[in-house]
Image (tube, rainbow, N blue to C red; front, side, top):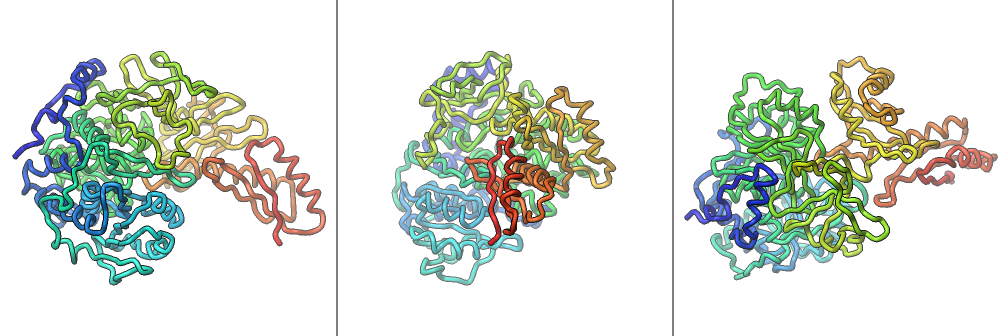
Length: 635
């Protein structure tokens, strides 16, 4: 049977705005899309049941001879068995299964089997236990699926700590990796997946559940770098649409071999990276349990392309920077026809360097958890504009607008006029699980305010210029950090760079640049200042502060953690100012991130005579700064 080869996978020319609009003349409800991810995956699994669906690489040096293979027949069996196991544990359509799973083969059983039984909640297993406890508790999960572990990952100490504060968890399922020798945690039974899974039917849902497109399939967290991430519900129909639209735009075929190093707790990794590949009957390469963090994953990537004949690779900007410094050598990478990037804006210089080195362009994308993964992309077969996030997917609407902060109303910007980016369409979620977090998320009831800044050009291409919160505001003058970063990426010794606002008593904040140099570079801050003054087109954007660092802090998704840099810059500047006062009782200056409340500084003094004059001096010195602070004393 080849159910997937019906009208919803028919080929289409989506290479321009005009052709997309022609495609949209057929209403979406006439496209014949499946109702659910379960049906859509079934369609993919029936193309060639004995074909390898998933190659799992234990290390970055694996080849097809020693990697772990899973066929489509095996995948479909395990998805059904997993759904039936979860149903036996009391999971119904409104019940939640939280996943502490890296990007291993078993993650695919739980992701899609969990959606067939109830609602899956993939969480970032690298987060602190207190944040994980809050997220899992907020989801009201009843079952926790945990990776058994390997030489890089041991989640059980974290799970043992959390389970005491998660009274709604009725069972823990250990799946994949090592099999821990435990039967319970704090009275909660621990189920060995491999020991029990063959007890369950492998070709149907024993619960008899009839899944509707409007049913919630998943609760993905926003992946925020500050505060506690929010949970975003996604329906089956939204995930089906997003997966289908991605496959249509990219023209994915069953013969494709696609690699991903993105984590499955990220909506892009789960849907665009994994599900999209599997529902097309293509082959998915999972690159180690810790993805790109594995010490051999990046260094051996070109050989991996040759060994598995990879035709499409999902990359992120930080990995692309590393690959550009890695010789291709004798590796045959002629199979590689598509490379995409997302999660963060990409430097134009880096994109052009990749095309020159590899021989294929990078297809830059844009999306977010709230839009159910990728929602725009440079067309694979049309005009690709370097630096642009490309064209909206069919049936998705994107605008740049000016928002009235008082009323929440907006007016659309003219072509090439910058504003706030808003999205509307079948992939846009309906709001966060916590209703209190939905204030000002939507405009005019249906338009999602992304929090990103950018413009739509005359051809309909989206250009992201930055996050509203990342703008550097120097004395009321808005400075785009990308302008600074683009300039420094042209420096031959610069590996990575991030521009942020540094607190300033006069201007509120001034530009600062954190720069990673090559190991053998003989460059100092003064050299960078001179380079910036010559290269950055706007004088006000030339950084006043330069911090040379060995590496930039990253989020688990590989994005530069600018929130951490703002904390560091604040601490550096407040420490410099207070130290200049010559206060002998100064113990330390510490900046902390308070999430939505922003950065706050803490100044700790040792108790003793004269502290009144010292606190007065500090308050006078910091009086003109906008970052709040507290002064306290050691007891």
